[in-house]
Length: 383
Image (cartoon, rainbow, N blue to C red; front, top):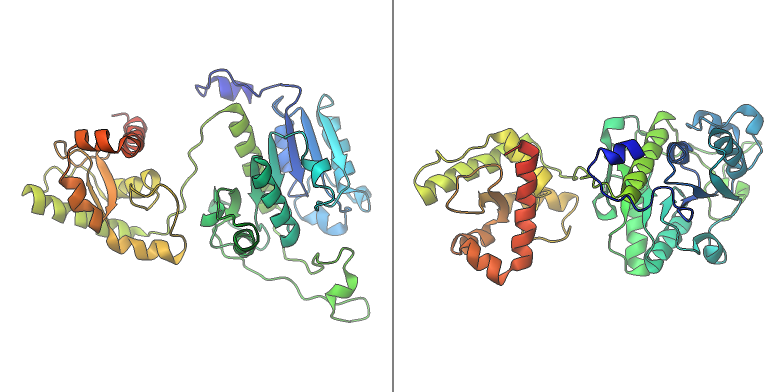
């Protein structure tokens, strides 16, 4: 990790190797998270929390450090022993605890550098995320990895954008309803729709009431099919995110934009028609459809340049393409990849009636934000 950081243009990595570095892993989404962190001195002290015991399902669910002899042993203690065998210098504080209001202080005190939430119980998950927001703690949350098979569909984005995941929807609704939290929490999720639902439950005598077999009230007994590689990839995503965040390496995550090629063709054609209408010719349109996709998706996240925050998600994003178009930022320069912004129809006339000097003087924040985005295009394309 240090070698990567040293070659990534990061000056003065402030976290690497400090004695008080602490990452809290809440519940068990793949030992891959901590295993990856153990290869770096960035995570010298790891609090690993899980109230459960290993069972046979763990052996086929991607737990590479769990073997048959570990069945019946605390997950936290089992993984602590394995991690110490890999990296004895790491201090692993294994807690066999269930997170709730009575254990919050014990678990979250000391202001850990990062909290990784891998809980699949909605009540507990919501309580933990709300506590992290209230305490000002950095947190990364994992959503549902079960019933998925496509590793290319995994993303990291704001909770507001994880619209395809049932667990995310439920958590998002509860956070908004119970705690007034709209977003601002990064999550790992899959764009892939689940390929299966919770499996039906039958007890030893054929009874079908899973609540009779709950060890902890409110925690589900039914299981969902899991392809072990997918939770492991979720864990690697989380480990990479935390390590780069702590090291100060800026990573531009891929935005979640529900546009297809027809949308990009439409936006390209609108640009050509607008150029012909305003400038009398489209000869200064210096981009193709693939570059339109880069501008719309990578630079502007499928939203107007004047929108500071995510507002429309899911179906709202599909509707919004009907009122968007690309226009020149600087009217004196061609419509190139580093001189186009995405605006709503109603914003275009006002923008084109103003000069950049006027925008810079009266809207310095907007001017700085746009120029920073367009600078990224220059760097990406070596302009």
